[in-house]
Length: 170
Image 1 (tube, rainbow, N blue to C red):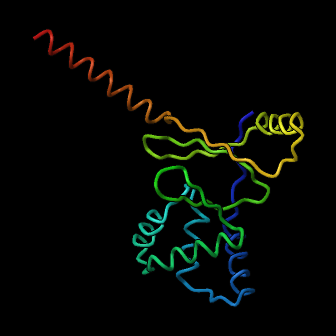
Image 2 (cartoon, rainbow, N blue to C red):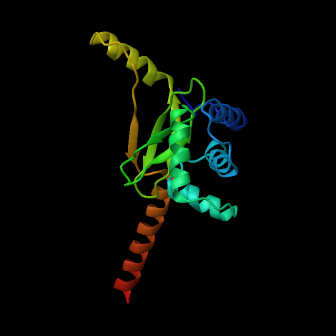
Image 3 (tube, one colour):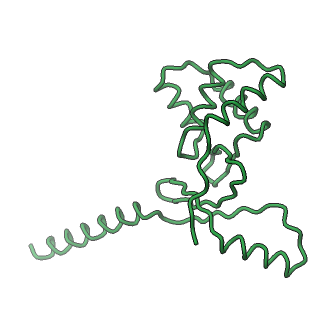
């Protein structure tokens, strides 16, 4: 059975971030909080470019170095995870407690869909047992074309076929 992973509690993550900053004698700044809020409350896997666009939209002046440093702090605190989906840039997502999940990545539009699957978890246990491995962690990324892009491609293809037929008849 495929299920969406548990939702992230952005408010709790923000409090944990503030606590982490204070414990490590780092200032709790408006810019750091803004970056954390954007990541914690987003439904997407954000790139640095996505963060900069959102900060600009919110009219919050933050330099690129501050964005990178804040992301490093969030990673060190264990509050976000960094992903490299082979796009030439990294994406970031907040971590939910006890939330292991997999990713589907659209090669056309870059959309990332998270899912959890009981069968994959059972297979992982069976495979590690069969080979005498003690499981530490795993990652599954499936690359393909999302349903929106498939639909768009199908419409483009059928439109092209219709145009070809019309041009032949003339």
